[in-house]
Image (cartoon, rainbow, N blue to C red):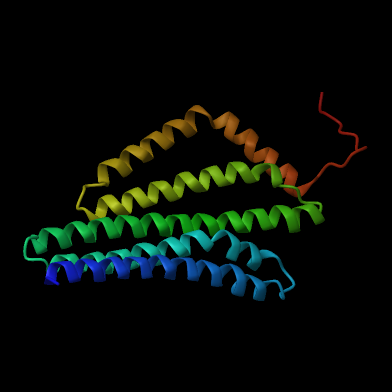
Amino acid sequence: MSGILFEMIVTVIYLAGVVVCSFLVGFIWRNVFKRIAHKTPTKLDIMIFEYTEKPVSFLVLITGFYFVLKRLAKYQQMDKLSFLKIMDGIFYVAVVIVASLFVYALIKAILDWYTLEVASKSDVSVGGFAPLIKRLTQFIILFIGIMIILSHFNVNISGLIATAGIASLAFALAAQDSIANMIAGFLIMVDRPFRIGDRVELAD
């Protein structure tokens, strides 16, 4: 058996092992940690483990693939430096994406837990704002992730940040009345200064 064929077989075996490890981590996350979380008085940790299972499994998968595929750089036919540089770039982008998904999963778990457990059992009702907060969180995490990736590849992001700031300012000025009404509505829902049956006296 030639050395190249042997290395290819070993690489395939390692890749299969990485896939198995990824499924194993997901299984442990779902059936061990989540069961332990069921013994706690709150459902927040249960929802966190449930929502972060896929990002954690993906992180194990891409990390394993990264180190296994780096073995291919041992082949004499490949330009080792170029191959490793490409692999490092792909791995960095993948890690940033998975980290962004993990952060969003955490925030989504907290928002869903608050909507189900806190807001539903108190006078404070902000569940209607949860979808808006999720969308805003998605946008912020996406923007930060893109900036991190571009910065890693030495792309000048100062202009993009300045453009985003100007666009945000222009949007805020154009929609200041709508934003003010949204904030006022949010504060009314939180503070609950009015109740059903109250009479509101308006100034002449």
